[in-house]
Image (cartoon, rainbow, N blue to C red):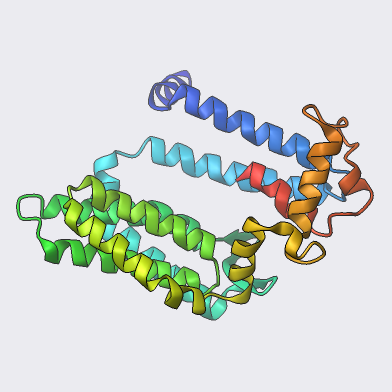
Length: 263
């Protein structure tokens, strides 16, 4: 047992693991101090964290070359899960983003953040001696497929993160600056078309970021309440469990905000 533990310690990034663990603890403490009915939520989060740690341990003891070799299988399996979400996903607040497996909800869009860069890296390694425009176009197509499937859920934020993770690998592979600049110009010129095809809630998020006071009781409500909470609590807050915005029910959806600390 001690041998396995020593091997585990050798393989992990100590500072990164410590920071991640600290954020998890802070998230659970914050969630417990929100004065909401959080006991069930905390138990659920601890269960999810435990499952994540088990997967984390398995991956640590897996040779990276093995994962890299199975990159296409892992990628297309995740694509298949994203397609399943469209037909059999759990809907919450108007979005389908999860698949239910017994008591565990799986969000494939989180998995694609790992499998897509792995797939793009696998592609460029296999064509490292003859990287051409065709290879770049194949890589872009592989990025656009999951981005489109996530947009259908709809989840604009995650789709942008997926696109950035994929295009970062293309950039590191040595794509020419001419292609990068031309892509930026095309994106800028296409912005009116992109805007017209956004969902209303997606447009509202952008407008809210620019001016939350334009709709203080609607799309800007949570942003304004956050500003009030920071202003009233100051740098150190009002104390554990004493948050006025939560205790006085100014936040109709408080727990999703707290979940950000646990992700």
